[in-house]
Image (cartoon, rainbow, N blue to C red; front, side, top):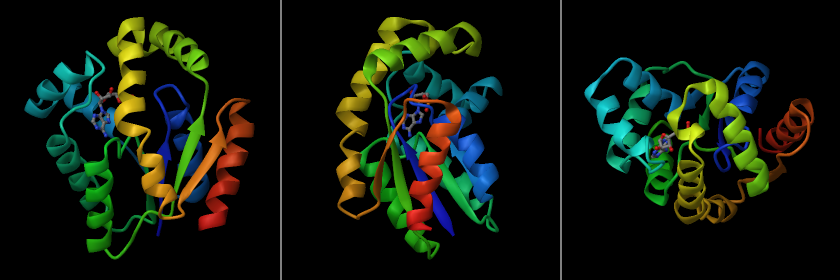
Length: 191
Ligand code: AMP
């Protein structure tokens, strides 16, 4: 199996690149943000809970997020591998993911970290907010909170994966094709 964590701040291009990578490597794309948005659309209890955090740009509690992610993996027992997008975002999530994959006799192959400067991220997110219909993309204060949460809670995970020799830092500025080429090369190193 190939299991990839696509990592980076909001607006780094994780979703865009995941769509291309899953086609190239035959992987299943699991985006916790997309899963939460689908719960919200279907007005589930989980969606209702998640929305209160998401609208402010805060993280949904680990217990909720980890449970949701695990059940999605379990729904795909014949998968060739997964692209985890927007997960893990905290150390407990990363530790749970490692333990969970180990129980399935597999592991993370690589963590691809997209590097994009803050000014570029804010510009991209405000632009996306015009058409995405996402409240958390339309408000600059919420965007800034999301970037702050990323720096505090998620960015430290780079050393979690670096310690396992699985971290690949990839320049996230350029054309979609250029960035895709860099990511594919990074995956090939670990596949
Ligand atoms: P995203 O689509 O990845 O930008 O996620 C949108 C929002 O969903 C985030 O700002 C969080 O509120 C929530 N979310 C997504 N993934 C996670 C996660 N792994 N842990 C906690 N909250 C998450």
